[in-house]
Image (cartoon, rainbow, N blue to C red):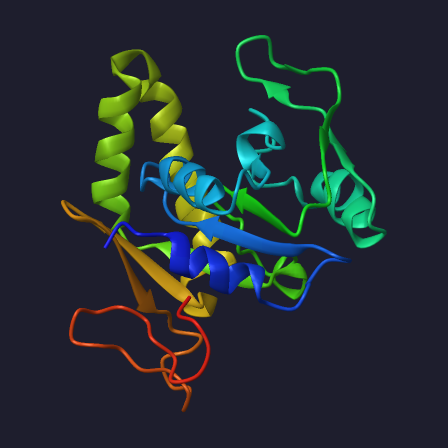
Length: 213
């Protein structure tokens, strides 16, 4: 289940979606395991760059970062140029020095809202971490500890408002479910009704022609 080589190969074989780049989003509730999964997928892709939305968002703009992402990331990648991210420092509450994000064949963007409406036209695939909000939030609170409980209270309210207004899961191509054995790839709502999608008995997404993704 945790073999990501085949889906990685399938992602590399997709048509470019943002200039020369195949931009792949990993979305899901906070605490759902997006960062860990994106890191493992990036490794399977041979070290693909990963943009963490924590570097784009701020305390005051938990979700109002679309324009910043467009200017710093989407426009340069569309031109085949390296993006230049100014990562936000959550302790100092300010943006840091620029960091390049190269226009690699596949670039991953992970974080809550990575599959938002404004980004979807630029995506080659939208992957959703299939974990309920409450389960994910409980994991996140446990991970961050009591010192962050006040932040989490504000975050969960903001996340709930965001997904109510701009949901990602209904448009996901793949649902990624974490289990004790690794990761299971299931067809997302965007492709469930497609005639060329087959779910095998093991629950893997397996198109009849071409590699699975």
